[in-house]
Length: 186
Image (cartoon, rainbow, N blue to C red; front, side, top):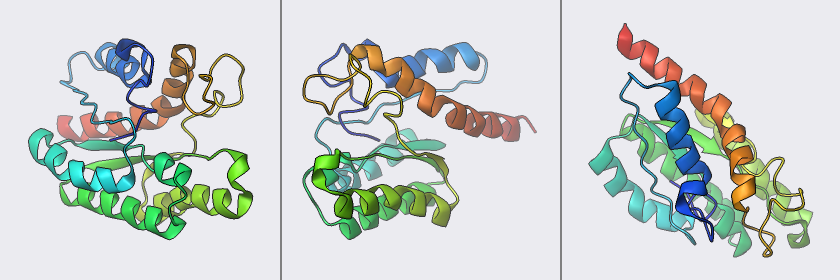
């Protein structure tokens, strides 16, 4: 569940980090029937996620939900408390459907001011701690400030930045999947 950062915005779909993740999953877990469904929509906010997640959970019955949302809310200047509450609802809804959540954090451009951006960023860590979630602090770590890895809008990564995004998520996700696979084997 994500926004444009996970929906391969203005790059070929197969170059996006989620598509690269699908390839990695097939390589790493070839015999374990691990499937990936990308329910990311460019422009999606946490409110949009609340509208679409129930159908995704019902149709696909995921064991793990990678939750990468909130960036658009922040860019729109929505109240930090509202963003946190919507993320909380997305987490609880996923857990009610017996899915573990990997929460992916986001940072906002500094021009929005630290009085807004710091509480926004802290929401993710606070929720990860509160719900004891697998957590990736910043999807764009090693990408956002590297020349050539961001599109001209300064918000969306290029195709060249996507492998690093995958590497930011992979160690945490791999551990989560491995624990699920191991539990099923017992």
